[in-house]
Image (cartoon, rainbow, N blue to C red):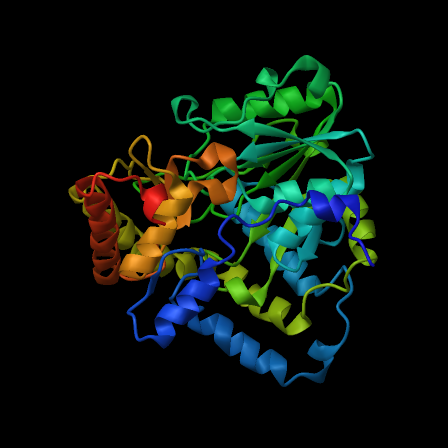
Amino acid sequence: MITPSRRAMALPGYPLAEIPGIKRRLLAAGVDVIDLGAGDNDTPPPGPVLEAMHQAIDDPAMSKYGFQQGLADFRRAAADYLERRFGAVFEPAGEILPLIGSKEGLAHLPLLVLDPGDVAVVPEPGYQAYLGGTLLACGEPHVYPLRAEEGFLLELERVPKAVLARTRLVFANYPNNPTTAVASREYLERLVATCRRHDILLAYDNAYCDLTFDGYVAPSIFEVPGAREIAIEFHSLSKSFSMTGWRIGFAAGNPELIGGLTRIKTYTDTGPFLAVQRAAVAALDHAESLVEPVRAELDLRRQAGVAALRAAGFVVDSPLAAMYLWVRLPAGVPSGPFALRVLETEGVVVLPGRAFGPAGEGYFRIALTVGPDRLREAIARVGRTLVEAGAEGISVAASA
C-alpha cells in the first residue's frame, strides 16, 4: 500500500469540501444558487487585455517556453507599475520575477529559507497557501491568531521569544483576506524593524492594494526604509483586472531574494504562459484607468452589502479595501454548520470563518462577486437562515 508522506498528511483538509457537491446537486434541481464563496469576480477582463491576448495567441513565439525570466516587456511593465504606484524603483531583469499567480510564488517561497525546525509565522485567519507552503517545505508553522480588538494585525513582538529565535519567515497580507483589515505606515515600520532585527524574511502579500475605498490608498512594504533588505512583495492581476483564471502575478525584491526564488521555481515550473504575460503588459501599462471601473463596481457592491447585512441584523464593518465582507456571527452560532445550512436551505454559498483556520471561527466571509441586486437578495436569504434558526430555538449545528 502506498502511503502519503508526513508532510502531505500534515496538510489540513478543507472543512467544507462537500460544498461543491451540494452546489451541483442544487443547480441540477433547479435551485437559484448565488455563489458568494470564492473571490472570483463576475466582471470580464478589460477590453485592452482581451485584445492583447487575442493578438498574442496568433504569435507562434508566444507558445514557446517562457522560463523564469519570461517576457522582458512584462518585467518592464511590472517595474513601471511599482514606480508609478508606490515610487519604488526596481531593475526589471534582476528584481522582478513573473509568477503563475501570486499564490504559486507564496507557496514556493518557504522552500527558499526553511529547514526542518525553522519557523514560519502564519496569520490566522489567512490564505491557506501560507500554511500549506510551510508544511510542504518541512517548516514549522507558528499560527498567529488575528483578533478584531487588535485590528487583525500580526504583531511579531508578541510571538514567544523562543519561537521568534527560530523564525526565518513571516507572512503578512494587508489589505487582508479574509478580514479586510488595513495596516498603517507606523505598523509596517514596526514590522520591518522587527524582521531586520531578527533576520526574518518578510513575505508581503499585496494582492488587494488597488481595490480600496473612501480615499484609502494601500501602501507597498517598499515604502518603508530598510524593507528591501528583508522583504519580497507579491502582486497579482487576478482581482484588480478580473483575471483570476489567467494565473499571472509577479514578485519584487532585491536580487539575492528574487534570485533565490527563481532557483526554486526552476525545478517546479517553466514560467507563466507567454501570451498571458503579453496580455498582462496591457493591464499593467494602463493599470490606473483599467482598475477604476472594477473598483467603482466593487464599491457599489460593498455599500449595498453592508447596508443589507446590517438591515438583516448582522454586525459588519464597512471595509476600506479588498473585495470581501467579514461578518460576525452571534455568539454560539458555529460558522461551518451555519454556512452549510445557508446553502442547503437558501441556495447561497458563503465561506465559514473556520475555513481560514480555527481563529476565523465566529465569522463568515462574503465575496462581492455579484451585482448589488443579487447581493441584496443573497443577504436577505442569509438573514432568513439566522432568524429561522433563532425562532426554532435550536442551534444551527443541530440542524446542519
